[in-house]
Length: 229
Image (tube, rainbow, N blue to C red; front, side, top):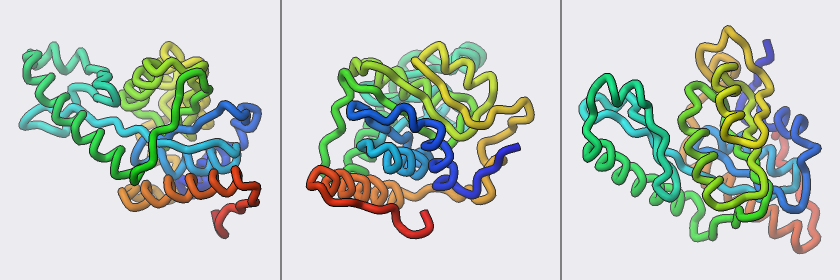
C-alpha cells in the first residue's frame, strides 16, 4: 500500500502523475485547507498558477458533526439526501445553515488570497486537488462550482481516495486521478505518515509563495523549490 510521508510528498508524487497535463492554460485549485499543500507542489512542478476554493460542511443544527451536505462558491450545494430524508430537515433550516456557511467560505477565501484576485477559470483546464477523498462531498461541491464558471476541462486529482468515491466523481469531472485507491480504505489519514491539520497561516503562506513564483516566472527569473520540499 502506497504511503505518503506528508502532504508535500503526496503533492510531488501527484505532480509526477500529472506531468502530461502541463500546459499554458492549466490552473491548479486546492481545496482548503488540507488540499492546498498538495496543490502547491502540483502547481509548482507543472509551472501553473495556484488558487484556492473553500468548501464548508452543512452541519445539522445541534449535531454539527453530522453533515447535511456541503456548500461552495456561488452557493453551489451538494446535499446528503439520506440524512435530510431520515431526519426530515425543513428546507428553511438547510438554507439558513447554507447561507451562514457560504458567508464564512467567502470570508476565508478573501483572507487566504490577501487581496489577490481569483484566477479566471473560464476556458481553462482546471486541476482540482485535495489531500484525499472520503465521502467526496467537498470535491463534488467544488467540481460543480467550478463547472459553473465554464472551464474547458476539470481534472480531479488526489493522492488517495475511496474506490467508490473516486468512481462517483467520474460522473462530475472530465477525469479523475486517484494515485492510491483500495478496498481497505477507512480514512484519508491512514495513507500518510504525518497528517497534521493544515493551518490557515500555512494556506496563506503557500498561496503567497505561489503568487511570488508566478511573478518571478513572468519576469524571466528562475525559481527553485525550497530546500526539503
